[in-house]
Length: 231
Image (cartoon, rainbow, N blue to C red):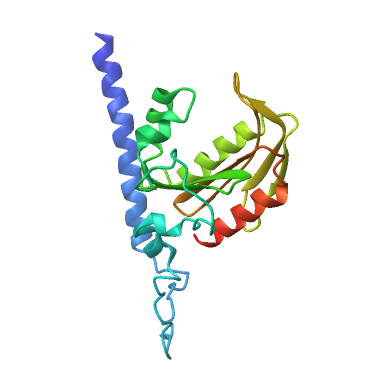
């Protein structure tokens, strides 16, 4: 029988390696060390006054865990609240997904992104309408979800070959956009639009402006800057 013999040889070879290794360890153990011991010196402890804890206004986490609606821009004086603004100022995951052309796929994606909640506001200023969403993600297993959410909306804004854009200061990749050509619903008047998308911490921000006349790039950028300053 050849297989048992070959197996015995193989086992003997393994045992020989183990025995040789053990012998090497024993020889090394009997020798005097030639290298100095690595000793970490004791580090002095910091002394003096400790920094004061952040206030609720300074700690973004504390602010974001509160009533998210309080972080939204306030409606300007004289502006009215349109019917399409959520009456309680909240938008759930289903409503947020329904804004997509493929709601079921969007809902599943929001599950992966750990959607938590969305606060919304908007107003009619007479010559233009404004809509603002502040969307919060839990960031337990998907820490980049807010930035990804903002990136996807920027992607769709940039599919317009004529769109004009400008970075939103202090927001990383956040940008404001103006669409030069108006859109027209069947039987309706032409509508001009502008939008802005950015993220900060566990929040993503989306702003839209609609009007009968072209929206200046400065108008949407100013709205975005003022909204981001509150986050």
